[in-house]
Length: 143
Image (cartoon, rainbow, N blue to C red; front, top):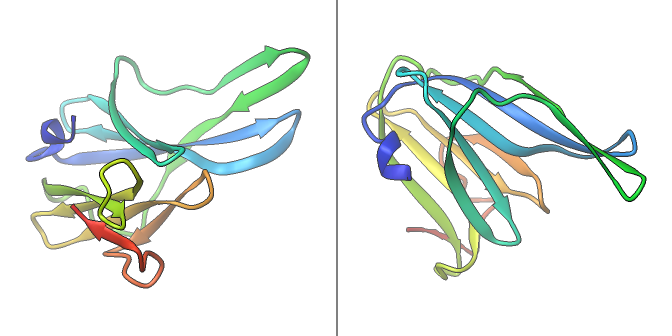
C-alpha cells in the first residue's frame, strides 16, 4: 500500500486515540493521512505488525460496548510542525527491529522538499518525530 502514497501530497492528518471505560489507554493508536486526491490512508502498528491501509471513508470517532466495557476511539485533526503539504511523498521506509521483517518499529516518510517524519511504535501507541529517529530506535534498521 505504501507505493500508492509515493508521489502524492499529504494535505492533512488525523489521529485516533483509545479509551476503555473513560480512561485513556493510548493517545495515538492510529494515524490517518489524506492525500490531495481525497484518499485516506491509515497507519497503525499492533504487536510488531505495521500496516498502511486504504480507507474507504474519512475516519470518524467510534464507540463500542463489549461485555459491558465501553471502548472509545475518538478521531481528531492533527497538526504537525512540518511542512509536508507543499511536497510529494518521495519514499516510505519501515523501521525493522534488528532488521527482521516480522517486527516493525514504525515508518519514515520522506518528502521531495527534504522534510522527513517518523511514526514510531511506543508500547502499543504511536509517537511522531520530525526527521529520522536514530536515538530512540537503536535496534531498529530502516528497510
